[in-house]
Amino acid sequence: MAEYGPFEMIAYTGSRVLEDETIVFVGTGLPIIASMHAQLTHAPNLNMIFEAGSLGAVLEQGLPLSVGDTRAFRKAVYAKGLCGAFELTQRGYADYAFIGGAQIDMHGNINSHFEGGTYSKPGVRFPGSGGAGAMAANCEKTIAIMALEKRRFVEKLDFVTSIGFGDGEPDYRRKAGVMGSGPYRVITNQALFGFDEETRRMMLLEVLPGKTAEDIQELVSFELLISPDLTDMKEPTDEDLRLLREECDPEGYFLKRKVAK
Amino acid sequence: MDKLMKSSDIRNITGLQPDEIKKKGQEPFEYWGPTPFEARKAAVAKEKGLHDKRTTLKEAVDKYIKDGMNLGIGGFVNTRVPVSIIHEIIRKGVKDLTLSFQSTSLCAELLAGAMIVDPDHVSIKRVELSWWGYEVIGIAPLFRYLVTNGMIQLDDYTNYGMSVRFKAAAMGIPFIPTRDHGGSDMELVNRGRMIECPFTKEDVYLVPACHPDVGIIHVPVADMYGNSRIFGAHCTCPEIAVAAAHTIVTTEQIIPTDNIRKYPNLTEIPYPAVDALIEQPFGGYPGACYGYYWFDMPEFQEFRGISDEFRKTGNKDKLKKYYDKYIFGCETFDDFLATRPYNKLKELRQMDGVQPILID
Image (cartoon, rainbow over all chains, first blue to last red; front, side):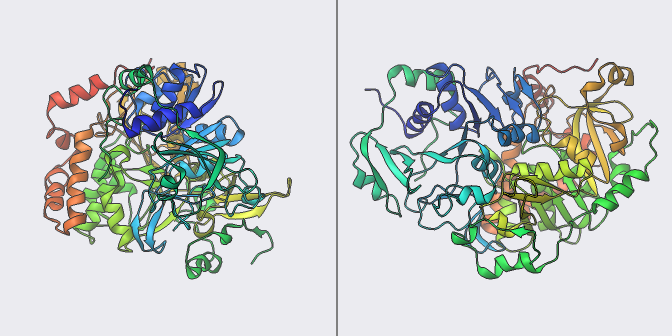
């Protein structure tokens, strides 16, 4: 088995989660790489929406470095603005959202506003919702990419930016007035999570080969549900790695980033 | 509590302080710029003929930018951002601004830096926004500095929320229903509200229209009357231009009106919404402008680096030097561009990759 980096594992897992004949609403970086890899392998008729307003772009000029990058509009089949992208989504034409954030809780709610202090005088302020809050509300299924750390997988968020299953009650999302069905997968480099249908709590589905459920629980502040069918995460083949490195991110902008600390 | 008002179950999971949540119910709603009625009056008062709107940045900014106003910033993060207008606004100086935008980077950071360097010359009072940062380049250090020090008031929406607030204003309606914000803490702190839909009887979240006093927009091409075409991402520029009481547009290139009349479907901003037009090549630099140039990442990194150093050390010297040299030390945006090597600008044009645009 070939050697691969943590970001390559995340991108590969993201690709595996996406099905063909769907539209995926992507953010910058790994979501685009995951979607490109899916297009090159099992999902040739998958298309991407970029929030600045393009649908079905052909990323032949290299990886867009921003969701508003002019490259994200190359040979698109539809190009408008943010209203165009989000209204297609609100209408039901975006199957997947790829989002991230600073903190996630057991019901898949995500914080990307602030940590510590108060809303009006936070300890650390992050950029804000951006597209994430709207994508989590109205794409059909939300896929979160997170760093697997105790301080990020928390009991209670400092701020709920992107709606997940809220308090876990069956009617939380309906009472919130949102349209999408909610959290679907949480991808990290060491584990893939889903959500239990009954309790809408995060459930460990797959672990990195060599890791155990206990190893993953150690990195999460809340109690995880463990799937009765827990398996190892599938590892990328040499061909997958070639596609990721040579076709998807040849400059290594996102796949070759150094992991913090 | 009025009887229309509903709520999701966000209170079951919120981590916000009770006194912060209470604020929303206590303070009467107020538009942070012209009301729909005032914005309508501004539109009605305009001369509606086709007039040559071409002017200089200095004249446009002198005429329209005033203390206490709501400034609507066009573009999206690093794309088609109205940097040349921001430079001129900083040169002139303006206080107690309200900023409105969906997602932006350098434009808002430049205003924030000007405030840090001399708050008696430029100051921001509050911001209605979705996102403020540099994306792949990093967080916005001056935004973080102002917010964590409690120096500006924020009103947070999603990117769709801010975009559709401009759209509602552009449609001439006072609010618009959305399918987001509900069930998040934005429901508890922003100025939207949840109601029961009179038709479906389900909860739906309303956001107020956002009419800036002045919208600032950079477009690829326009005719001399201000009819503007936009290629690549429209961002929320057509909506902001029509929503604003007055709009200043910079354009890469002026094209003949005959061309506009040939393909009127391509006009994204119609002339009555444009009050001042400036032909300013590279007007979005260091941001990207589809069909003209890609963005200049090292240039963003340079200003961000200086900003982050200030945030970490509190020393304003380098920041002040930047403004003295590149903004106050320049009379025009062309003077600023002249400080950048020609080869660098040429390379950015090449990096655009000849995105196809239609200017006939």
